[in-house]
Image 1 (cartoon, rainbow, N blue to C red):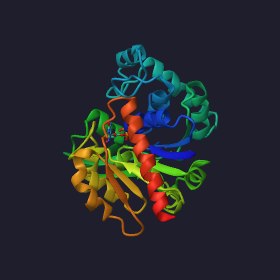
Image 2 (tube, rainbow, N blue to C red):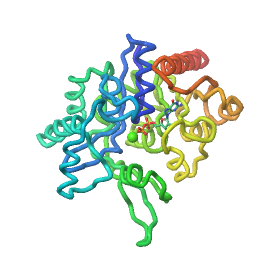
Image 3 (cartoon, protein in one colour):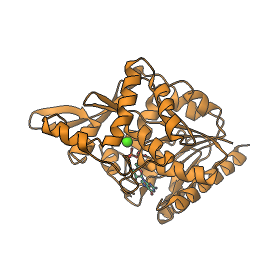
Length: 324
Ligand code: GDP
Ligand code: CA
């Protein structure tokens, strides 16, 4: 069975760990978000790719959900002593090694997809991890301050300002000229099932689907496409995804997120506490069928994430049978 998943950072990675647990023999391709990437102190940092790689490779800081376990911060302290900026984004010593290798390989001319493959040679995540594009795409957030409107890097808005400054607009700089990395379109077209894990719909799944050709491939693949809501009730399970939805005018609810993907979804899972919204969600799809089920969607451990993965696959198979 070949499974292709589109993933951001923490929510995506934790779900994928459950998926691997549920179907260890599946051939899994992960199409990762790169629009959170940022250059810091001359180093190319790919937060979402690294979160997937460290989580599946056993090197993640479990409590935090990102970064390396048993991390130290000597380099960050030395940089601060020089007054080097920015200081709102701290890189750990162990993590820095990853960014040095990535930056060196990129400077030598390797595409990000080849660099990611090389990094995964060490981590053996058990999936094929593909950046959605080898081109540079960056999420920027338009905010208003005393000086008027200005665009800041997504990481500055998220990490420095904790998404507390109202976002007038979120845009993916460079997306129009980006092309899918080698293997991305094939992975969607040839999959037996395509999964949208509970990742941030605006800034994680959003840029992946916005790379020209990707959304079209997901819409036209023969494989059933199923997603899991990152929103339970009226709030994201963890983190600040609500602010990103509000800035795009989408209701912060499982139904609101389903609406963003109504053109591509065959199935959508909401939490049991949102069972009331199932019928409304099933009515969202304009063509074909959209099946919605309410199941527990809290990933409190690997087993819970695995159960969610089994529910997603089950929904996928039943969608396929209905179409056949
Ligand atoms: P990021 O790049 O680290 O922000 O990670 P993602 O984009 O992959 O995922 C962030 C989303 O994961 C947030 O919107 C959360 O609501 C969602 N999330 C995190 N933990 C859980 C969980 O246990 N269950 C569900 N349903 N969603 C979760
Ligand atoms: Ca991210």
